[in-house]
Every structure is written in C-alpha cells, then in structure tokens.
Image 1: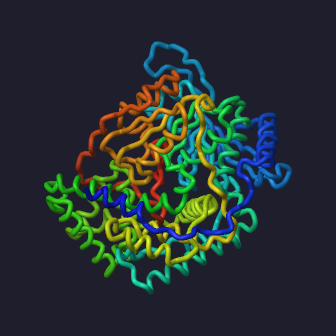
Image 2: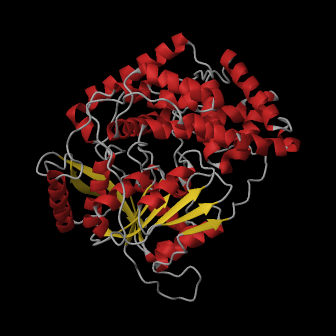
Length: 554
C-alpha cells in the first residue's frame, strides 16, 4: 500500500509550465541527418587507429585505444570537430568451455554505462571476468568516453579543487535559509558551466550522443550496430534505434530510463525519488533480518532510528572531521542502488553507532584525488540532463512538488532536488525530447532488462520502452532491485543476454527470472568507496565489474 502511495504522490503532483526557450530545431531535421551522414562517411574512411592506451601502464595489453572525430554541431558537419576516446579488446575467438574450438567473430559490441557523465573506456576489461568470456570470445568489446567525458572534449563547470565540500548536511526538512543557500549554489554552478563551456554547452545532449554513436559505428567498420546501453545509456540507445533503425543489428537496454517525452528530465526524477524510498525500506528490512550481525534492530523502523541517530551525531561532530550527514546519505543512496553494497554499508553504520567511525570514514569520505573526475562527471551529467528537456524555472514549483513528495518519500527527495537544481537556471536553450518508438518491422528484435524494484530507473520505464519498440522482449528480474543486470549475479538474466547476443535467440514477448540471492551479512574490514558527491548513483553491472578489474569502483 505504501509503495502505491509513493507512486501516486509522484504522479499526482501539479506541475506548472516547464522551462521555456526550447530549441526549435527539428531534432530529426534535414541538417542534422545530413551532418550525421557526412560525419559517418568520413569516419568510415578514416577508421580508428588503435594503439597503446594513455594509461597503458595500468591496463592489460589486450586493450587498445584510439579516437574518433565527430562534429560539435551536426547541423554544421564542416565546423568545429571534437575527438571521442575509444577503447577496444579484440574478440578472443577462444571457447571458454575448452575443446580448442574457434569461436565465430560477430563484430563489435559497443557499451555505454550511463550517467550521463560516466566513461565506458574500461568496459573491454570486463572480458577478463568469467561471466563475460563467452561474449568476449565472439565480440570485440568496445568502450568509449562520450562527448564531454574524460579526454572527449571534457566539460567543467567549477574548479575541481573547490568541488568536494564535505562534511555537508542533509536535512530531511530543509529550512528556508538552507534552501536559499542551495538555490544560490545552483545558480552559480549553472553560470560556471556557461562561462567555462561557452556556446559549445548547448551541443552536449542525448540526441548528439545518439549521432556520435552512429559515427562510432561507422569508424569501427560496422554496417549495423550491436550495442548495450545501461541506465541512461538505454535512453540515447533508444534515440539511436528511433533515428537509425536500419543501422541496428542487436541492442540490449539494461535498466531502462522511461523514454516518454513528458517524462524526460523533471518528472523522471520525481519518480526516482519515490522509488528510492521503497528500496531504502528493502535495505533496512534486510539489516533487521540480520540483527544478530549488525545489532541495529529487528525491524526496519528500528534501523531507521539508528540511521537518524547517526545522522544527528554526524551533524554535531563529523566523523574524522570529513564525514557529515551528507556523506552518510550518499553512501546509503549507493546501497539502495546495489545490494552487493549492503553488507559494507550496514557494517559501517553499525560500527559507527558502537563507537568505531573508521569503516564509515573509509566508505563515505570524499577523496581529493578523485575531485577532477567527479567534477567532470557532474558537469556532463547536468549538461545533458538540463539540455535534453524543459525543466521548471520557478523555484516555487520545485519547492511545492518536492515538499509534497518528501512527506511520503523523505530519503532521497531533497538530495535529488539539490543534484538537479541547476537545470532551473540553465543558460542555454533546451531540446525538445524526441518521441521514441518504432513500428513493426522497422527494427530488429531488441532485449530490455529490468529489475522490478530498481530505484535508479523505476520499472515503469522498462515497461514504457518495451511498449514503444516494436518486437522488443522484456526480461524482468522479479522482486529484486539492483541497478544494472547484465553480467551480474543472476544466471537466468545472463543466460538470456548470452542467447540473444551470441545466437540472436529471444524468449517470448516477456520473460521472468527469479531474484538473485540476497547478499550474505558480513563485517568486512573495508568496502567500496564513493567518488562522487551527488545523488546520481551510477555504475552499472558491466561498468562496475570493469572498474573493479581496473582497480577502482566509481
């Protein structure tokens, strides 16, 4: 009943006029179509000159790197060009089941991990993991940094040295003065984006990400694209399928963003805040079931009171002078996204309340050496989110809608507001969201993966995408909520992905998988660390595994 109330609250909010001044250019117009065709033809002729990766000392020798040139503005393909960083590991052609059989190479599998603002450059390393060896045998694994990310024409909106501001507060009922402070910060951040990026800022959006993907396809020598998009990567993957259906071979949409034009941006984030409340309750219930390990109470309500005590104590005295309520909240927001973090986060909370702050400090503090990457990721995230669609420009709308929502979904609502609030003051014209969809026979069969209790991309997004792409198949992990399924702990889901990518074989229109096993409680000495201070919990299952192989988890 409570979950129904949450979604009802998010869906029934009265929303006034969203941000004006949308870009009046037809997103599928002739100029952009011609520009994409011109850029793709040039990329096909040039190819990609793969060589050693810039940080080759940290990477296995099988992965090589290169660049692909794309127009900053597809309406002007002969104008300013930018370079996208690309990585590749060749198909091994070795059957991991043994026998010495050669596996037929099926081309390139391009992956985007989402964000917006996440890099996919380390994706090819995922082929080193057992769950991916069959796919790595048949496909060249290709990752890339989208425009704005890393070395790909990087965006920045503020001095990275000033980026981490912990310890920070996270009031569940922010005061008027606190709200004014956050509004001023959002305005300053939006101004910083405009000042640092100039006129180029308007060209960092999902439609151009989809066009970049077609140029990358051509540069790789692929007549048709095989693509896996995770989280946000599903959205511009869906744009790609709509714009270039004849260029699609196979596509996996892992944890789908709701692609409806009326949902892109502001309304999707209202739905996300509601979904996080449900998943936070799942996490607390799991902790309560293991009270013998963590001692935080035998009910989810008792665990909540423990969290509130910890937050109040950190507000008065930050742990190690570095970790306040904001850092604790960010750590737990990550846990609401990925249940493999549950034992680490529960242990840290338990230890802190029992007098040992070290696990919490290690998991939740912000690390200055990661500031530049985190600031770049946030700059791209906001550029794409704010450019993609109109947002409310009147603070009163945000305040009204989120005050109502926070009454039933207090855990993530205000953090989500502060993350996205620069979009209220964004200084460049917005895109008009494309109405994603394909008719019967326009697109080859595609695969949509979704966890029923996913908080980052609520399940209704997968249902909507499945309904919009004719011939798509939806595979649902029931009663589970980890964000990003491919290559994760569910053998049923992984079997569906392998059958599709390796054989083109799909189940009926819909299929279900039982949930993967819950994590086992433990009291580890250390756990995964955070590197970004905002409430946009990304890395997906493929990206996290690849990052782990590289030695870090974003």
